[in-house]
Image (cartoon, rainbow, N blue to C red; front, side, top):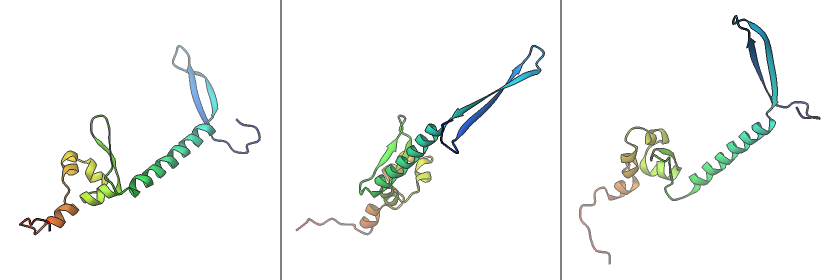
Length: 120
């Protein structure tokens, strides 16, 4: 534990010592200062929140996939465009959802257009 700190997070672990007859002979206890670990965990959570805010602010579609191609994250722009929640996008048929949305803006804009006219 650190000197001068009134309260510091400590991990306490107890381990029994068992004799040959499977009886607990005594206990050992250890106390480990985990303040640095807690600080690092809090910093990581803050960094993840900031990254999420940055991703959601981008006008481009952003997907984060793992090595096998499974969806881990999608930004708000992508989810709004596709019309799905992140949980729905992660479900069965993820690849199809990524390729075509339930009611994407593009399909709504093109709905009712049956003929193409040249641009003048």
